[in-house]
Length: 110
Image (tube, rainbow, N blue to C red; front, side, top):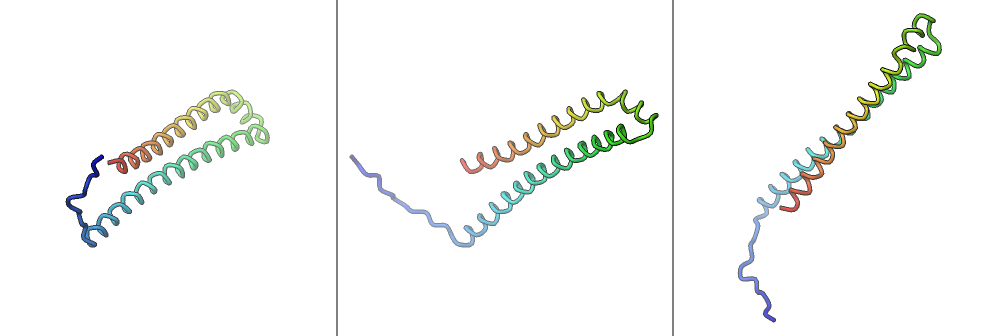
């Protein structure tokens, strides 16, 4: 069996290596910020929906009678809309995170 010999070895100057490292760190930091912001925004949106739901439920239980009657009529619509909003926001967050991860893997495999 023949062994393959390295005919020519490439050398990378230190300045170029540092420049490449800094560029890589900037790209990875940007991706980390995008992922972190999508997670935080998803959590903030979920908390705003849950807070609105808790506020509505407290009005139903402890509010004036005329408010209770109005809210009871719309409570199923409100809950359905909240479920759809939360589901869509989680889907968007998931797609954003998966996209960032796929970009990272694709760049490393080049």
